[in-house]
Image 1 (cartoon, rainbow, N blue to C red):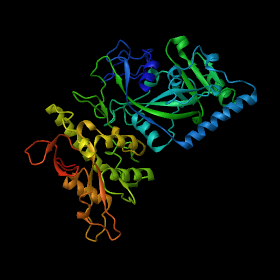
Image 2: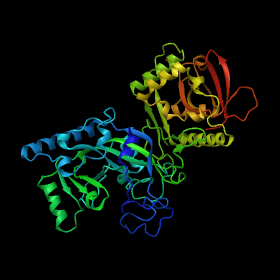
Image 3: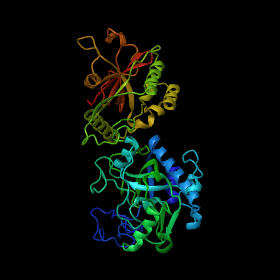
Image 4: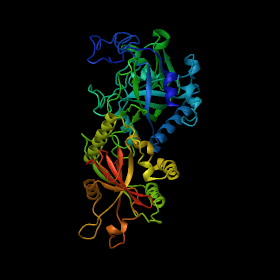
Length: 494
């Protein structure tokens, strides 16, 4: 529903708040002229984006922040009833509900019913990808408020994706000018559940003399209102802006990552995060897998080296995968995920080189699917259904370059013990030899005194496949070992 949500709330209007999209910026860029600079207007060059293309959607489920939000919503309901001043609905302060309502009320699977008794609605807030990913992965509430603004010091939100997009950026953080080295061309939109409560309506921004202080006193000190609606559409034919002054009145429910679509189809494309092949649909790829603890970090600037124990459902899924492969009924005592920024960067660079080579050869995607070697079709369907709850989902793999999971047995060290996860991983990377099924080689690598085996489940990019023994410039060489098991020799280090 997010494509439709963006389409239905789009308006072909630019304001003075929209940054100049030209590179370099034009001479009007910093003058804040009404309607924005000439480059940002609907008839400009490159002009106002004509649409927004959704790349990825993340849902935020945070019990602590949700508890705060619900408590504040209940407080507002009780406060208004206790004072005898009923909450003014959107119909009383405006001619129509928020633009978003037409979609959110028709999509109950994505948007829970809104509490009309507290003027609850879904609204937008534009930001940059790194900040949005911090919200999604670190379960934090970022300070999104303005200290100075036409409606006072609060959280500013919009009913139109076009207005909220004016404040989104593809930089590495707020206040920066250069595009993010990975997410350049990708922007972030927070879809927030908001309790507006009793709304103070205004058709203009407050002046900095006594008017703003008077309104803020009414809202913040006297508590006669819970929010402000700045209706600039009524007088200036632009947008309505919504402002609340308590962070607990907003709950970030979704993070939507998107591209701007301009009249010139080649302008504004993401440089790294969105991958396009000549014969395949665009594929969005996170720089760091979204189920990692270090999801929001830039691995070239924020180094990390962590070993994280999987949660019980993750361990159960790994055990289920081993059962599918016929490794009896294994007792998986523990499963650890390695998150290493150096290893990840080398892997991502290798994957990109393979993609570029396949594009040059006109073989993207390759004719042979590596997933068909890893799991038969019926198991692959089960994999996709069961894996989404624990981070193994197929949507996190670039299938058009044959990115898959493969296994590697772990060699015991000189003391007959299992090495560290990083040591085992480095050994697998040096050998570049992996298996679609490790059941037939476990005994060759031995077990510890506690009768434990070690196995690595590796993310691998196979690219173009070739049958073992033939001279080829393929990216990986596969050999049939029989019994639905394949030996995969990767040709590229990393």
